[in-house]
Image (cartoon, rainbow, N blue to C red; front, side, top):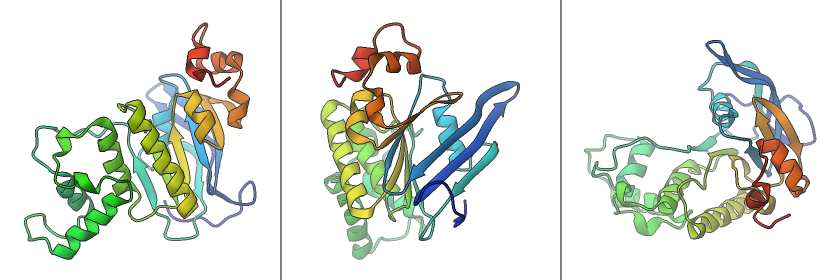
Length: 252
């Protein structure tokens, strides 16, 4: 995914998806998906379960064959950060947070001695997401919120031009989710960071995001979060007959 400086829609965009389609076997997972992520915006991607949100994220990351076009307009080295919904690893493996970040850096074999300066560098990487105190904790023993903050720390080092988050609040309690969202807002403000995140909590999306795209195989809504304050609209997007008020959480 190389930088692309061609002009796209709007004055300043970082990601443009046009006419994207994904077919697996005989099943059309996505069809004619279009969206634009503006620079410095937090852009939410929502939709019912099985709508193709994760497939779209994987396509953007170059991990899924697709039709259509995906274009980036980068001003720097084109770094893309990513925090997956799930990270499949054996929690019984005795790997510390320090060793996990060390592995992600991959600048020399793990069995070699680690200079004090390198350890300080990893501490500073973790400090960005307020989890440097977890450096010597086992990855398998972290809470959902702690685990997500460690993943976020490695995703924003170096600072990317766009950050992709797949269900970032998954397996987090209210306190952990609030802390994670505060960190996202601080990173966006400090680095003018562009963020595309998969979410489902409309109440939080209303408070956090600048733009929302809803998909259910194709785009079914694209607009400002305030347009989702209507429970009827939310019910339509998620295919609900009841429960739209619960998704809004009193935000309507």
